[in-house]
Structures are given as C-alpha cells and as structure tokens.
Length: 414
Ligand SMILES: [Zn+2]
Image (tube, rainbow, N blue to C red; front, side, top):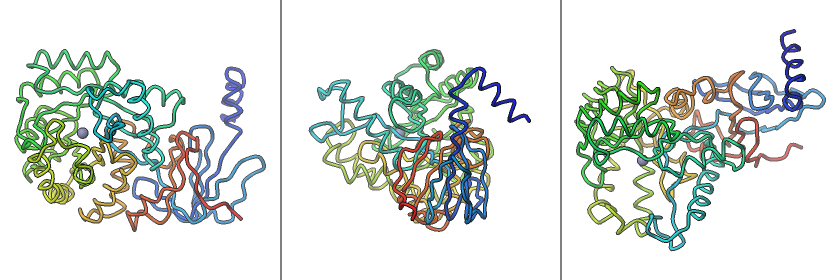
C-alpha cells in the first residue's frame, strides 16, 4: 500500500523516476560479501534506480520477473564498491613523462583530462568512493562526476590543504572557514614534515586545536598528516578526526587514538613502492631527491610494522587509504592485498576496512559501504573470494555505481 502511494506520488511529481523504478535490475553471483563481515552464497541483489532494494541468499534458481534485467555474474563475488579515504587524483605524469608541476607548461585542460583519466581508472578498479586531501582542481571534477557528466568515483575533497605556512591559530581558523565557503567536504592539515624530510612536527598543539576546533564547529572532519609520535599526539589531543600515515607511531599513541576514537589511516607499501618504481619521473622535483628516496626505502618495513601494531591495538579504527599519487591510480587494491599478505590482517577485515568502516569515517555509513536494502547501489564483482584471498580484489570484472554499470567483463551467460 505504502509502495503504491510512493509510486503515485512520483507519477504526479516526477514521471522520470517512475520509469527508473520499473527497470528493476537483478544481480546474481556465487558469493556476496556485505561489507560488514557477512558472507552469503548464491546471492541475489535487486536494484531499482540508484538504490538496492533487496539482498538474498540461496537464489541459484532465481528467474527474473518479466521486464527486469539480470546480470548473471555466476562465478564472481559481489561486494560493496570499495572506498579509498586518501588518494590524489590530480597528480599525473605530464607529456615528458615527469610528475606534473605548475611550472611544466601543461594547460589547465591537460591537467583536467589527466585527473578525469585517473578518476576513471580508479572507478574501473572497483573504487566507487574516493577522498582526496586535496587539490583545488578536485572541485570541478567532483561536481562533474556528481552531475553524471564524466565517469568517476564519488569524490570528496579538502581542496587546498593547510600547513605551517597558513599561519598561527587565527589564520588557521580563517583558512578553515574559507575552505568551507569554497565547498570543501573536509579539512586536510599537515602537522608534520614529509617522510622524505624526517616527519617531524610542524604545527603546535595550539595551531591544531584552532584548526580542528574550528572545523568541528563548522561540521567538517579533519584529516591530519602526521608521522612523528609527537605530531600524532598533538593532533589527537586537539580532537582532530583522523591521522594519516603515522610511520613513526608508537604503541602509546596508537592506544591514545583508540581511546579517543580517532581514525587511523596507515599505508602498507603501494605509495612507497610506486615512488621507487617511478623514481626517474619524480627525482629532482622538490624533496624527491637522493635523501628522500632513501627515506622512502627505509619507510617500507617501518610502515608494515606500524600497520601490524595498529591492527593489534584493541578498538583502533584502521581505515583504508592508499595515498595514491601519479603512477598508482587504479592500483589502489594492491595496498589492500599488501595489508593481508604483509600486514597479517584477516582478508575479511581488510574488505570491511575499505567498505563499511571507511564509509563510517566519511560520515556516509547510511549511503555506501554496505550491501543492504536502502543503500546506494555501489556494487563491484571480482573473480575469486576476497574474504579468503585478498588478491581477488585486483581482479575486478564488474562495477556499478548508483545503479549505473561502468564496467562489465563477466563471462556472458549461456
Ligand atoms: Zn597524501
């Protein structure tokens, strides 16, 4: 009865919505991971418009009702669209095969197309939501994706990050409200140096309290780049939402994060290996020098060690973020496989960290990250079972975002 009423209301006010609602789409697959740790066999998901309407097990002999379409993803595993809470889609290699910089003569159109390409590669790799901390260019990309004009993951951006050059507490507060006015989805703050420069603290407790306090009062989350234990402690005590990287995190600050409910986003190795694999494309630009590359090589075992200790810290919410830069877009799932293979994380937990837990860290837990009725139809299918073999996450065959299919390489049904 209520359904009929809704349809009637839509018919009166929005005939287009009724047409979409009639085109129910069913997906059938061998296995389904719900994003919260649940696993179903012979699963069926029904989607209407942009949302999931049902998720069921034991649907092996399911025949779709007349008029509705079926994606028969027989041998594949369905899971929620993946979420990377830290990537830089605006970073790309220019026509000379070097990291793009504002001085390299590339036109704004070349930069925009490169970012669109990175976002498309990321979406095809099964990532339907991406958080970028951040670049001013992200805003137009985010809005074009949201309007359905170009393919890409749902994009959240901090726009230009804040750092020690922003100024003292007063300037930082002003910069936060300026970002809010410019349309930032959250605030990114550098509280320590880069790993290439030792990772020491660069913002004081007072500066962090000003920035994170102002953001909180404006309803914005704060992501803080912090490597040293001191910079992490200062950010956590200032009430910032999430710590990025944390290569030098001690057990003490990991426990402090857990106590305060601060999200932690460590990387496993993709970001470092990508820099080292593409050394010639970065070397000679800023702190990408001999010393910087040596520091990144040393960071790999440290990062895996921190990840292991973070995962062993009771109650610490460890979310999934790759810090993907030029050369790593579309390879995001490699870091999830690394977490399992090198960090020792149970494969199902790794999936949860990049789905429901990541969604919660973004405040999007009622929209994405879980396959359940009412959620956005962000659905990925991979070859194999990622709850047993994380490498399966690199074998994406099907990508749906908000009910639209962007990739379908499943074997055609007989
Ligand atoms: Zn980053």
